[in-house]
Length: 125
Image (cartoon, rainbow, N blue to C red; front, top):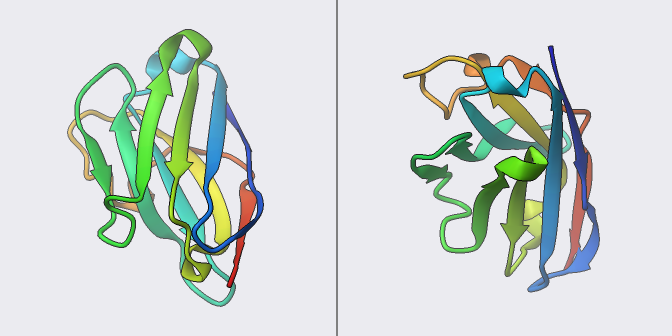
């Protein structure tokens, strides 16, 4: 099992920044990639960003490209999501997730095996 705990959410004005963290524990050696997803009220959960756990490319949703950056610190078993130039439409509950399977489509919710509880991000206009 892998446990994931998100932190760093909060209330910020439009144009501001936040950095989310996701600390992984347990069988972290089984992780292939980590992703961030978000879910706004009344909407489906959607992909935000993903990164290989031990290297490789980062992937982003078009809506966040150029504003969000995903990174990892393997020594701390932590993945980050730096969010800049935030917009009201970024308001959502943000989840991190862990994927254990090589060669899967990291944009898909169904490809992730473990999920955190989420951290709320609210952007005021």
